[in-house]
Length: 89
Image 1 (cartoon, rainbow, N blue to C red):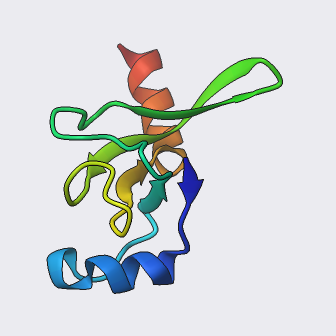
Image 2 (cartoon, rainbow, N blue to C red):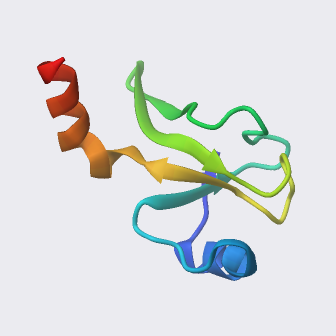
């Protein structure tokens, strides 16, 4: 998936969700996107043969719509909380 500029996403989704926060990321590639029922699923990428998760499916408008990228949660901003929760439990 390709990352969209935050300002671009603000223009697209302003009437639906208001302003984007740093916790949100926009990604899409024509014909590829998350859809209903995918919320909470991973947004990941393979780097040097290793898979890294950097986002969670949050929401979107339709599925694979050319002019509406998917919205994902930026997992890196929650890394400390995730680490503390996993090691504590």
